[in-house]
Image (cartoon, rainbow, N blue to C red; front, side, top):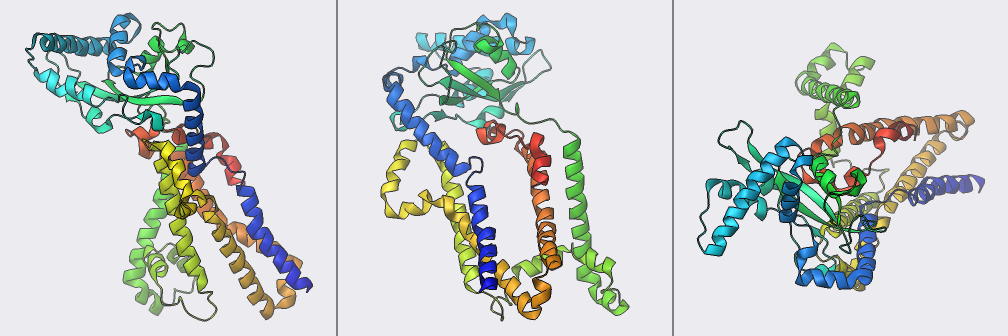
Length: 439
């Protein structure tokens, strides 16, 4: 009875304690999505008249055209390249508008290659504001593909994608309480000669007195948040590169020379076994091998539980990503009335089954060893080695995940609008990575 109680306690600690620990984890995707829905609902209740006016007249939103006009008026405080590019496109825009008034529109090559794509790819207030639509992304790839050779200068005229955050109540950004919490966000295509620093000098009071009365809260340019390549990046790439090269070499040797090595009698040596542990050929074959699935000693239902749990995790992550970018997020709450949506609304618990399986397998294996050697399995030394072995098994994969996320992952988002997302910008792993490595 005491032994059964001991193992029940071990199972409970291994399963439930992790669930309790992870309940205090930082916001995950699903939680971020749900929080956004609630913020939108509160903002709509508080600022409904302002949102209704925006539907009729979007003059309150600082559009790409207003930003260009403001930059021209304050060209003395922005960089030379920015001033030069902005004046060129505003001049073209005024000529286009003048021709439209006269009913005689003549498009130049610059208009077709720069002006129209820049205006077309910029976000603007669209439908479903009353259903919580606050993100107007525009078209990223159309913007950055702008590349025009300006006659008489070496520098090309390129487009750059910016994300502008706008006060949700259209208040001046110098007013107390403005720009806090939820904001309208829209993408704007502007000349690549302008930086986010140029725009913030003009629009944001934090950098001094705003030169233009506006409700712009923040302006980001693609890659503003991508960290510089540092020692951590090069060390991480080197570590991963060495592992990949060893894995490939071990796989080649394993596939072509395994029989020769067995005849030579070296397959039982420690060096050979360590080298073969990296073999991509053996490891991939083992992962996809299902021949031993039903052999004695296997717990069959575990495979079924694992499959449905993985499917549930994928469903939850897909839906949470959709919640963050949906054009009608308030309609998502209506899904909660559908019985089948319980799988999505309760996706928080999708990983609990993994903790359950881990506890079951751990207890199952311990009992197998106990029946073979009761005194040795239940000794103090055995329990100490039990935890040491657990840490040794977990650490390599866990350390690789921390290292990859901290120093490599963000570099993969260069030249992508994803690097302006809050899940990307609010990350402190570069300061706390050593805490993570210490568990």
